[in-house]
Amino acid sequence: MEKQRNILLIEDDNEIAELVQIHMRDQGWNLDRAADGNDGLNLAQAGEYDLIILDIMLPGKDGLEICKEIRNSQDYVPVLMLTSRSEEVDRILGLELGADDYLTKPFSIRELIARSKAIFRRVQAVATKDITAENATVLEFGDLIINLQKRKVLLDSAVIDLTVKEYELLSLFARNPGRAYSRDDLLSLVWGYQFSGYEHTVNSHINRLRSKIEKDPSDPHFIKTVWGHGYRFAEKEEIG
Image 1 (cartoon, one colour):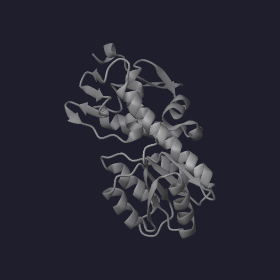
Image 2: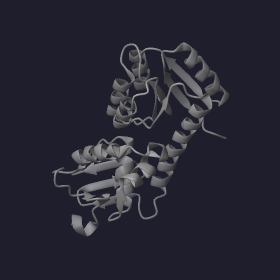
Image 3: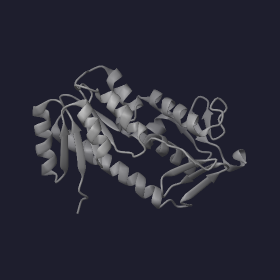
Image 4: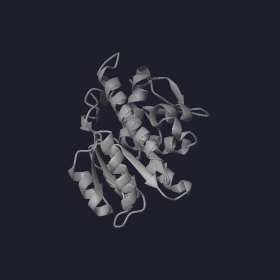
């Protein structure tokens, strides 16, 4: 039996919200709704959700600001963004701020359900992969320790707060030290095929990850640049 899902929809268009609610209930999922950005953020911070579906254009706080605040919290929850605009900048900003997926209005309800299920599968796959890692549940690279089972990262014994994409990048690299990944490889493995063409998103996430785990991000110790190709994680003999 499929796990019960709790979803938050932050959308000010009542017709869209009603339609989404009907179809979410048909899936057996619980849906909370908010039509205002401030109310939506309060619900997101107070509740425990498996997915937040977030419109960009909202009264009160806009969706991009809400996404940013959600990603600044310690607990991870997937975010699927909705936008009625055609400009690419909305999609780029949403991805840069940590959204897991996006849909452009008008969208089909079937696609929304399919995207939601795909997000649930990706989250479960990451959790399962980490728990059943072949070599170890704890990876140590000098002062950097990655507990795959607890999804916890320590540097000099201090807990490092990572977004889900930063963590997925780091755990992918750390499980395969020395292997070079192109930006397209990382987009496919971490973000999914639908993000093809957003190589700059990889660069910005790598930069943010380096700022959190590298003592000198301009001279990285762990995540190395492979010029003309992409990135790799240093092998243990390089780290010492």
